[in-house]
Image (cartoon, rainbow over all chains, first blue to last red; front, side):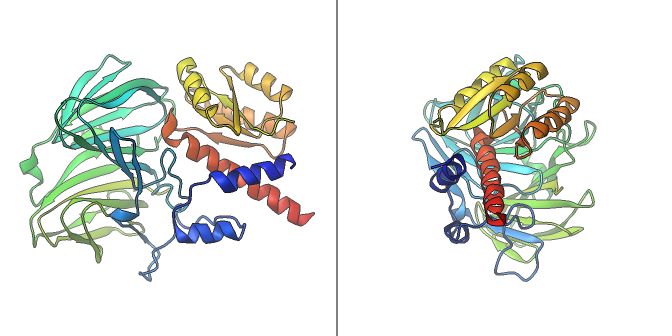
Length: 283
Length: 113
């Protein structure tokens, strides 16, 4: 076996593919075509500006102390059709056992946003920050040139569930930075509450990217629109709880739905629901 | 004959570089070598036969451009990619994807022949 054959053989055995389409492509020995933004368009819609990721199609890993669902390829879950949505690279839905967590590990050149959904998460980093983040908090870590940190479930007797979101930075190699903000839950009842923006002076934590995140706690029957803030950006919606319809797509708990090439999105709650909207650059 | 995929990792942060090397080298088919400075990177690239170059945190854009130019002169097929995230989260995905492209390029090359 020569070197080229070895690389091909190693790839064919080690790439973890999860979609039928990808397996079919692999079986033919062909190249995975990159469609849109590293994903295949949904078959059920005629338009080419949306992508649907149902909750039960996410990558899943249970490490005992950590039960995690990956909307996009992460760690040993690799699906070439689900690598990213524009600058949004990681959306992990993590459940960590009491007292357990991620030991000290490095990060660089990534905007990392953590949103606890239940329980408390203790954070320590190489910049000297020690903090506990809990429900209604949002944490940002601009990893820049490099930092080390650990994250542990603060409580011994109950799980912590949090969303770990990674966004590619606008500028590489910036000075690392940490921040967290506590938000009033009543300010997002039937409203979209801005929790992330690119500006220090705007609402929410600020990140090194032209990205805006909003949380909404929407009561059944409520309807609103989201106006895209920067032309060319796409919006990825993640349903934390309940059922909603976004841009004519019905969504349920933990579904993800991306839309691009639009100026505005319609959102309506089919039940009491909580939704996270992530507007990110697509190029 | 060494059949490992040889990967050169360039980064300015010694501890992060060490972590990335350790993570890559846990994979039996991959062999990673690190470089903290431009000179060290060029020297190692000239000495060994690499399949892939990962640009890690802290490497200036000028250096990155220079690496691409220099390395492509030595090996026109070389893939130089950026590593994001610093740890295990994206590392295996990034390498896997780059190797897929290398494999496809080689497969296309074989077809042309």
